[in-house]
Length: 179
Image (cartoon, rainbow, N blue to C red):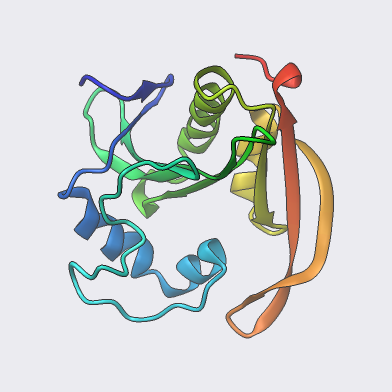
């Protein structure tokens, strides 16, 4: 268990090729969950497809993708990223998806905290935000436990599975963050 960023429950590390089929099956294969999280219409995907959002990709100035593994047993729990990184404005967004067997165990809060550490301490960001559906109570709880504040609700701005849903924006500034 080396490399990556450590929290109390999880480690964020680079994506491995062996992670991709698991994430594609359990995260992309969940049609409703994928549509709610990605904000894009779900489309079928062949194993190993280049279109996979979970494929191994190098970090860029705009995105830092990670695989989430549990401490202790190093089991793949999901994926997370800082995305929409704006180096001039020193801001970014957090995205995360956990495999079904790893939800409801407090891992989400730990992932958010580790991503904040990475964003504020390593990248020197000023602001991190989370955009989530207003009924995504698990993500909202994880964000608020990590210190995020509710900022705005965009009414009926996201089209998901045949209906418009409200989106909540939560934000955290570097000066408000408690490591």
